[in-house]
Length: 301
Length: 222
Image (tube, rainbow over all chains, first blue to last red; front, top):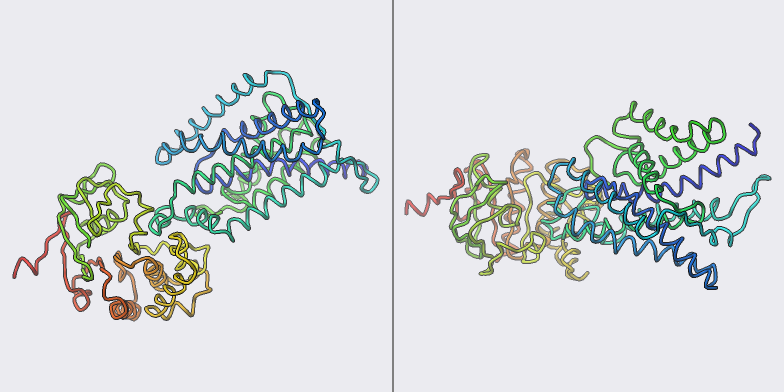
């Protein structure tokens, strides 16, 4: 295997890790605060992608400038967070926080199933492909290898900014510190006047918005078609479990590990590509059942 | 100041407090004495809104039975739960200030109240920048008291603060409560304890709780 292939594998892994991280970080944030594993997270990712690809396709066909693809991604993410995330938390999850985990899983799984059908109803079965954002930024040559600026630079930069921004938000803003306080001890937080319900709603909206943003960012790199949500949720579960539930920085490292592992397999043993993320997860969990950065009991984000 | 009217409190479906009727006047210092499981903690938690209550609980004449738990501290209620429950990711001072920020107090008011907390608990000033997760159990109780003081302009409720404190620390905690009394004559203070002797010197009024029912031996004898 010559070094060009190695570089390509690294670049593929890096850009893929950035996308998986965007979804996994929202999943782990929601789990850290609400203690609910949101299976519907994959649908939120898919709908973010569909919105971006379909609206983008329509407005660029009408002659609008491709640069609009970037604000469109943010709008799609906000729509997913507010219009889907908001009602899911407010109307459904709020009723089941004290219920058994199995029921919580079933409810979010049901939401996932419903949203999968909603996608087929709205966007049909044919794939959407809209890559103006990716083409606009062009290619870059690194050590003799050409790669798209969008995937090699923009995606990792957005992921890194998300990681740093989320950390700063949680540490430095009052709202962020309220989230941190509720995560550690819901009742103690309420005892000092924090409205835990509002914190839950806000966290879910932010987490859902991040999934939507992940989908929006992914849309120029791939065909948007039924099933992408399911693929992404399973992969981000692997990332979150590998990192340790609720671990934000851990999710970034686990996403890199799994992204790079997956692309290494793609270039060496392609038939193992699907399997490798789970082999990594399995290996980690066999040694550390609480995940790389998890601790058995602590609840922190 | 605080009034229970025929209040039953439940944890799940199990009744813990039964038909509780009780009036506590403003500025009173009350000891609530009872064994483990008698209902001390449930009494305080009912005021904070963490139990299902049938009947009425009133604060300054206002019925708060249906009020959301998160809105109650803003009535001027500070509560230090039994097991400290600090926010370990924040510093000691951040723990103390957070209730004030949540309540939307302006910076000057927060600084005033922080000064008052340090007046009552000078030792907290020395550990202000330490992470709350790194202080000892006894110091943690002091921090929890400081955090409760940030909002307790009307009512301060301390759940078994002396539980598990080394004698020297218990002495300092008691001294802090006396300093609080010197600074703030108006606040109502309720302290729970299983050992009736411990609060004798401090409390003006002693209530005894047994199997969810509160009696007042001193007054009944008189």
